[in-house]
Length: 228
Image (cartoon, rainbow, N blue to C red; front, top):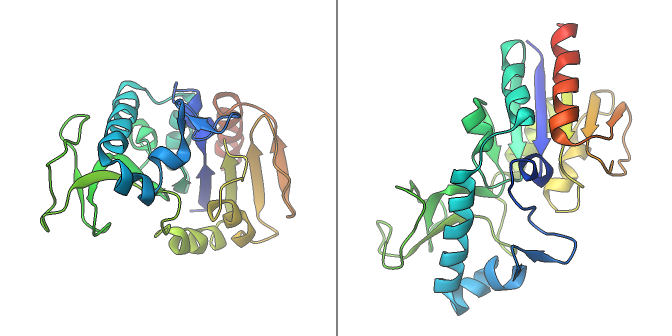
């Protein structure tokens, strides 16, 4: 069974109503990134950061997977599919995808504020101030902030190097280190790029699909399923 490795970004979730991480004005839901998505912001005003992610979590739980998420899940019928996502929502899982690696964490879980390896499911949409992990530290969103290490990046690079087919969908390749993952894909492997604005990639075997995720992803999946 051929291995399909998929790297997804904010564009695939935007069509489910979730705002992209960084809009053209540099804000996320009206907030400066530096005020809600850095370790320094947490130290400065943990209540604000907690409230911000609680609201984002509520938005995620109210959102539904779209046609692109479901198309990817259907690819599992004939391929070994591995999804590497930059997104912190759980829409891939809710659409039925089984192998999902979250580079930047997943907002539906909490984590210890002193040991990021300690993560927990969240009952509902809210983490309250005063809720602590087993070490006694305040729980926070299980999200990788700017300035923090991306713990899964090496495993993701290995996956990309083992791809038989590679799909890039809904990402402008602007956020590193995730943007560098395509460079680990063997040059001869077919690479589908699905985005209204195709990013410049110094790699061979590129199939450009200048569409939104809900249009381009079903097209690619239909082609791959017909080929098997």
